Length: 117
Image (cartoon, rainbow, N blue to C red; front, side, top):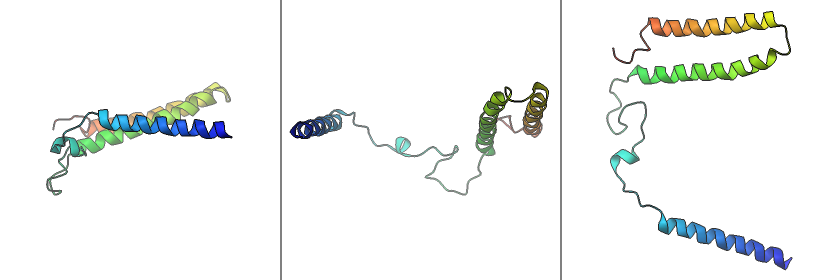
């Protein structure tokens, strides 16, 4: 029992020494406006909130989310190829990819993928 107490106190002592050393030896960063301000969607958070908002930042986020969800839906689809017949899974896969391509065509048709307008 005494050995357990000594080991736990030693662990607490070593961790406190390490925390103290990291506080002393850590690099001191200078506080400036650019490093402290969050980068939110391409506008300065310290300025007026009534400025025009660029929709390209929002659309890039939506495109990322769409293709991120696509990947999470394709993984179970690949695993289910082993459980069902090949022809029905190919129909489901082509329908899924067709829906994604229609969405991509819609964004391309409205020039939302061009960064400069």
